[in-house]
Image 1 (cartoon, rainbow, N blue to C red):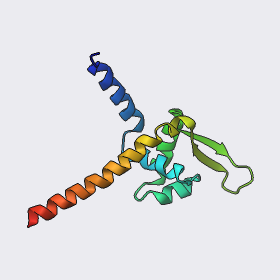
Image 2 (cartoon, rainbow, N blue to C red):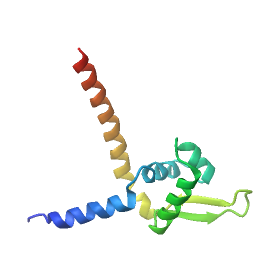
Image 3 (tube, helix red, strand yellow):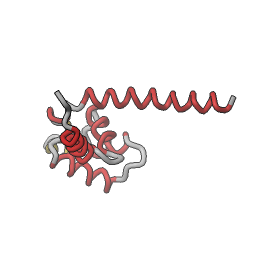
Image 4 (tube, helix red, strand yellow):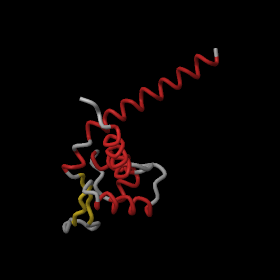
Length: 116
């Protein structure tokens, strides 16, 4: 059966629209690693501003990737958690992390071999 390239491109564009940008994947990774409060998330991601984190969390909430809840027992009452929908992307994120590690090594080795 022939693949429908236009449909595949649309699906890729949808994925990039929802998960694209510099911050969404690191935010998902942070939340999935137990950082549920705004400050914890911000401190776990070097370089992200509170304004950008706030914007991205709102966008991710609209796309059903994170759930924002109030913790009435705590002084800082807002918690963020990944949704089941977001967790379905977990294996892909793991593969992206593995690929990133391999790619970094590949580039370092290439630079070392070129310098010789």
